[in-house]
Image (spheres, rainbow, N blue to C red):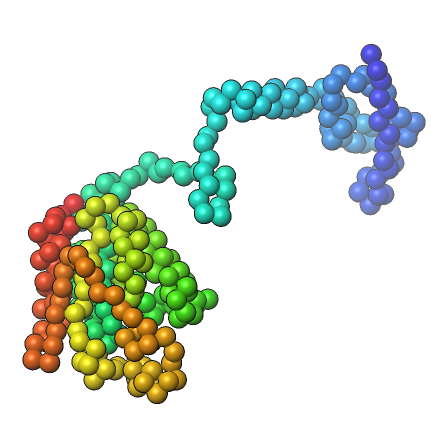
Length: 288
């Protein structure tokens, strides 16, 4: 059998005493596969005590595992099927042992997305807060995804150009879907002016779990309210691409709830919230 010589390396004197001459002159061992070099021995009292200088099986086991993997790759058996989604390649969906139904039973409610859309100043955020409070008082767990709030963090890298607005809606739609899957009643409140973007978000959820609420408020009334002074800036040409002024808003065609307001008929936020709560109750979302 082939022999291998293991040359000893003299340690620093501060760590050990004298290094045995046997290792300085070379220690001859039989090469039986792969020698565990890290376990040559332990120096104690001027002597070297050899321990466990045995061949290890790692090489054989590794090659066996590699062979199994290669065989599996060739045969197509026992191989997890990965996917390519967009620019993400070789990804795999890991399913949790605690599913949506279990989470809903724990919370005694059904997860869904309430998507509040409308012009700036139509009362979307006001309704979202009133609705969240109404559901909270009934012991229901909600979370609000407000358009401006999301732009403070998640979407801080996005502008108000058309392509960025599309990405803004896409991201919020994906986050809303995760909340709904967790069993939470997610309230998304944002202008979301383009019909296709809202429909894309709807398609992320099971049938019925996307509840579109249209704040049907005339542009004139929204301009009169102008809570953030944005309409005035847009009219002065200081803001470009402002929805309702020089960028279109596409009203929903088949939304679940329409909350109509005009100069003579402006229901209070709590009443509008109760309209949405009644819908949720009738559809069974407030029961586990």
